[in-house]
Amino acid sequence: MPIRVSTYRIGSPRRKGEGLRIGTVRLLPRGVPKREYAKRDLFDAWLPLVAPSRELLKSYKDGKKSSAQFFRAYKTEMKESAARHTIEFLAAVSRETPIAIGCYCEDESRCHRKALLELIRQQIDR
Image (tube, rainbow, N blue to C red):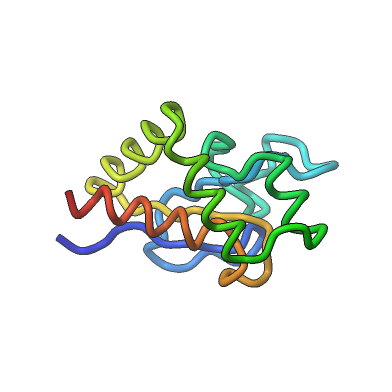
């Protein structure tokens, strides 16, 4: 079965076959009416349950956590019941339709969406 989950940067142009865009961020974009999220290539659905906690994100951005520490802590947060079930749900949805998980970060190698993609793919492979 082909992998039907990818990542994107919120606000980037949609790619052909990308599917449903899911914003995996804690904070909604400022000054953008909800009815315009999809029109502006932000996201079709908002799913903050799989975003890093505000505290974790702040400690990472402030330089109090290295990338390795951030990703370990993020994966620990994603083991909590609600997040774990949401990841299982995303894996199930991606078996039926393409989805793309997005965040505001410019550099995906330093973004939680990289780790989230890995967690979803692990569920797909089960």
